[in-house]
Length: 340
Ligand SMILES: Cc1ncc(C[n+]2csc(CCOP(=O)(O)OP(=O)(O)O)c2C)c(N)n1
Ligand SMILES: [Mg+2]
Image (cartoon, rainbow, N blue to C red; front, top):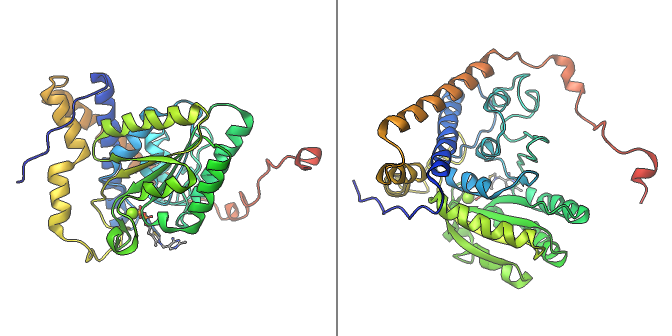
């Protein structure tokens, strides 16, 4: 086995470090369970797992405050869990059951939580980027100092609407952190084959948007960069780009021929850079936790994930007449409120 890269020095308290470990492990075990349920035919349709990328959302959520918003693509279960959505509701949505966040009618790519300010879940590549700027526009208008995390992939970064959004976000100084989750692949196409630049964040410069590269396998580096980006936005300085270099271990979705990269490449990343193992090492080496403490956390997470799978299996399928509900919003302001 290749030598592991030495972990960075922690810039957070041991308690925070343990929390990151717990949060990343929850996402990983949840995703593994979702993969199993998919294999058993209990989850249908598309399902994109986040395994390998956990440090991105956990590090950025640690930099977020109450009321901040988040919006992302179809690879979205990790974002939901990291912002505090209930694993039972997420798993039940994956299995298409009444107890799911969209009452079983949305599935993996279409879940939302007003309470946690999670705005989806979007299947059209890049479409969430202008929506994210729209959320930030509203906050800017309301002068409430909230920040929106708008996540998108390296593939999405080649969509034209991203650059229309950069222009408006910079022009209006919108409080939006553009988070490029650069996992090096867009389905089976590597960044090298599709993208004119090695570092995508540099594309913000013509619009006057600052950006930087972040090691997405190191949750502490992500948290530090997140703090900086959020402070920039909250200070009214406009958008900020974080290009987070990360890696997904599983296929693009549940059907993936995996011919576009070698097994060795994946294995090397897992063995040398894994974000959860990194924090585990830090906890043990710093004597902030014992093997037994970590075993107890593993058990706690396993129980939460198993309970979510049970909940998802037991929750009934939505009734047929649900086909006719939630199509139009009941919340549209009436009368004068919608006149310009
Ligand atoms: C507009 C549009 N074009 C193509 C697709 C098909 N598609 C789904 S995911 C994907 C790749 C996107 O890759 P990336 O942005 O890097 O995100 P990742 O899957 O790596 O998280 C493509 C081309 C789509 N859903 N929407
Ligand atoms: Mg990608």
